[in-house]
Image (tube, rainbow, N blue to C red; front, side, top):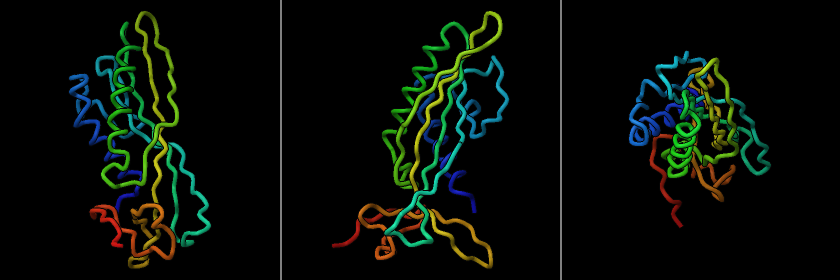
Length: 184
């Protein structure tokens, strides 16, 4: 079973692979990576890196103690080089922001995704400027430990406010099932 952070990175990559080539045809699946440690070469820029940074577990006084409300910091970093690096990175950053705004639940994988910060770093040696734009998103989701043959994997569950907490446990559904509105 994959960890929820891995699933989130993979879904974000799928969304970007499907839509970024329309913005910049050089952005193919090979130029979008879900690892920050991917080696980058000038001939393979612009490139997009998707990685996770910090994750907080939020206190939920009305929720089951086993339920964990997580807030993950997801970074999408666009790296470009050359004289037009700033413009290329800005256009791609704007596209990434729009793509993730359209589907903030990532197909009901998470409760929500919101942009919290944009950082710009500039560097490079000699005549070739290199620019990196990092978009930081806060991704909110719930997990609950599940006992399966002595192993405690995490299962990602989806429900919507106000249908949260112990009294609404029946409203939670595992990721991969389609969410249905609670019946009145």
